Length: 113
Length: 116
Image (cartoon, rainbow over all chains, first blue to last red; front, top):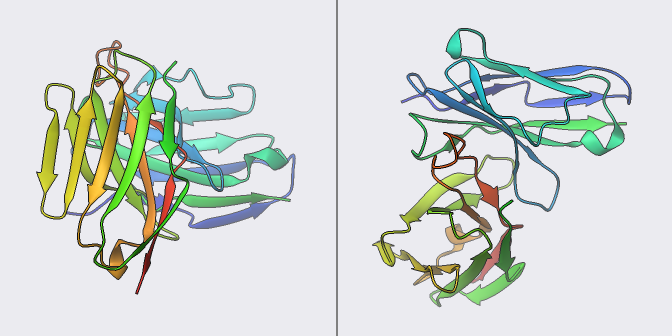
């Protein structure tokens, strides 16, 4: 079974630029999550989708972050404009349905200079 | 919201010895407690999980215990091996009881070092 796919693997940008990350969940998984992991810390939830609807975006900085999951399959997370403190690994995870085990991708490492 | 505390931040044990990592949580509504292992450059990988209707769960060399009254849970690794070296995270969630929102709240992680 293929895992959660994410791209790009690494991204370096300057502050105030924009960036986008892509995630393709495990086939058939209805629930998709984006997490932010700052160096030395545990992942922090940014947004949760159930199919193509948002279930929880309470911790998403909506003035600069946006995410969508068109057609309930793959998803994109965008940051515009980026700040230095956005430097982190952005992890995508999926589960078959709510209250099931989460499977993580390898993440996109973002460096904002 | 939920707050998860994890200790210790670093744990060094001799190969073959046991390792124990402890976590506490704040929200009594949390009912799902997974443990993840993260190796350098990779995403977290689920190694074991427990739900609040169970007090203990074991899978080969790994076990997790849960004390709902005290709101703490622990990971036990026996007969440690070099490949156990990694960062381990505990997490907690309400398991969908919050209107479908079941995002995990993670601890800060424990760097486990297995000394040969």
